[in-house]
Image 1 (cartoon, one colour):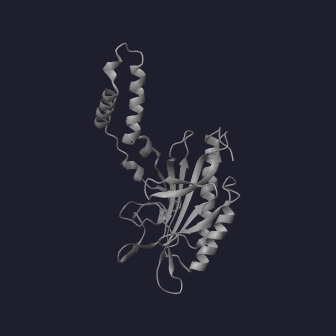
Image 2 (cartoon, one colour):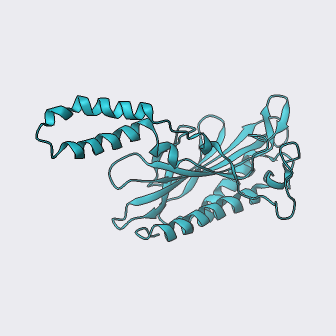
Image 3 (spheres, one colour):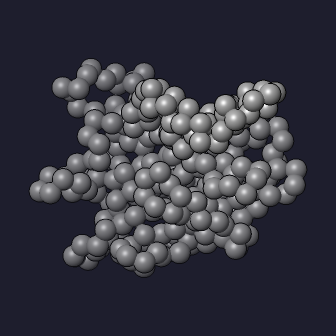
Length: 262
């Protein structure tokens, strides 16, 4: 386990991003002209391609998402976005690694916004709390997975839409459709949504992605979280992790989505 912050120069970080983009090209063959660009505001590298599209993250605004898998019509059905953050400091290696974030999206067949499915994140050791070096979300597993799709499907907007469509089906065979006017449908949908309590708080759960519990069991919240928490030792570690996560997600989605291909 590495418990030291990762500090580097801007030149080395840019070189690392160029290497990572080249390593991802064989994993993401549908992403044309793959590259990692420095985004505005801070030192952040963002994965882009000639055919990337902006996708809205549930946390963190929009990000470019490059094609991961396509459907039978050759359009991207799954996409992935990558963002790597470093913070500026002083000293001979003035950048400190903050976090690497992979976000996976599904693009609906119709012209609708991409749906965020899940994330893989690896925050580094840094001053997340002023005056105290440590990890983001203390005690949680790092690196980790987080699952987001339920938040989309159970949002009030999505539930209202499903209820309107369901009530519309019930309306069709009636001889007195005025009983189910559009206003009435909306009112009914609102009432059902208000009464239906949906708890999506569990989507904040950090699923540890590299725990060593078989070798070093964790004994609880009052004990060190070393068995499931560590920071990248170097930029090679980051590149190996990113490429492996993307490749693994690609292969699992290929098995699950028989209509998709590379």
